[in-house]
Length: 364
Image (tube, rainbow, N blue to C red; front, side, top):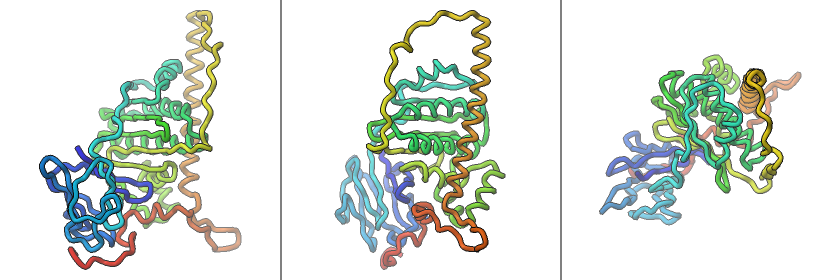
């Protein structure tokens, strides 16, 4: 089924499936894709099917509809086309570039997986995990996902950022999506490509509108909202803002139950591949059963300590991101520190005043 990827900000993308014969785009609430921007008319354009093909038609809007940079009244769509409705960019895709689920998908049912098994699971360039909504089991699955990201060619900083965003996304799926219902599953899919690494998280909840949550958060005091977030044990708009700070783009579907995080590779950040030591493959003597049990117990204890330390690390990083560049009082003064320079990516959110162009004279 064809899809539209609406670029709400430079990093936030909302995905819509074209699931009806006439699919409308405009500022009015009656549209299938509602864009609250001044450059968008109430009923701006629509996508229709004709002889088995999809075409887009402008509905007499003030600022027009463009297809691949050319203003059109009516034109057929092809896979990968870029539509501009007013100044909002929308990508048209007839199919996904890559399958969502990897070929090998593992169901995690316990709070611990042996290291040799994890090594086998993460050896390929893609990984699929299915996990019940049970925190200890989710923590185990996240550790596997963390190790997968660790072996990619992202820089150390980029890896930590992607891991932090993924931690938030998975925690959001647990709390807000599946609401800690152990009968519901969370799916985590990761893939490393030549120019990027991406992670998809899918829950079985009712979903929620990221944009609506962000609009609410934009009106709150950041530190107060952060305290409210942790007291409530949830993610909310600040968690979404955190993810946007950590990745190059975040896509979510219209329902809000599936998100994909993209982290791009940079040539100067490439991490050299770890050389394979042939001596590591040398067979060792089989230890006794009692020795095995002792080692197993020690490994489980170390794994638990490591997992607790990992969670603490991500919580610290989350707190850093949430308070970074936010107002703080200096000693003896009432002056404040300026907002972070990229804050516009988290304040506009396609609000009515986001694109301050001339008002509509038609279709108002």
